[in-house]
Image (cartoon, rainbow, N blue to C red; front, top):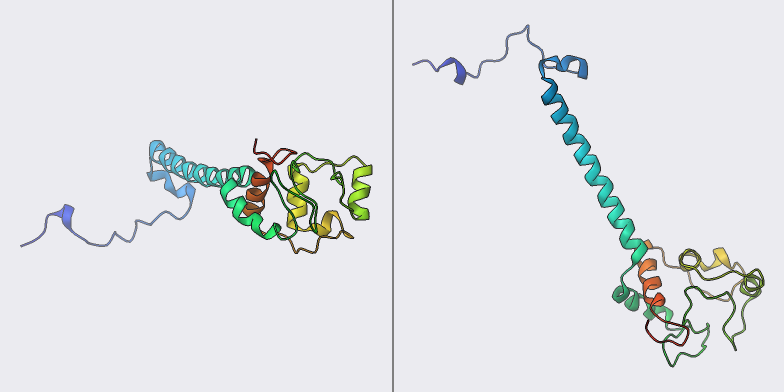
Length: 170
């Protein structure tokens, strides 16, 4: 018994070739080609959106994760209504605060110079400082290697941002 022609698995005749480049896809209709291009564009768009989503997390940060990460900072810094200067200054209202402006704390020459120049701890400066304290203050007192994870730095900044200058949560 012979199979019907539509079910045969015979190889293609030798004069038919598999297309190897776009010019040889002439057998595809315009609709099929557009459908393929649309599929590739959709995949590219999804990849871009995933990238933006990760950047959005980095920019916003997670307060709860930041509180956990801040525990390392708590060895030298304090925050909250009863915060006092320790090895480092208290960090109430640090986001937006001028450099070297906590009363009763003796700052390094680097941070005192930043105060004279009118620098403030905006989120970009805090991010840079948390990544590598010696980058902004090469002769500063802070002996900390830095936080290498961008997400973890964003989380710590989100945690710090919630405190006003008196240590109350906003």
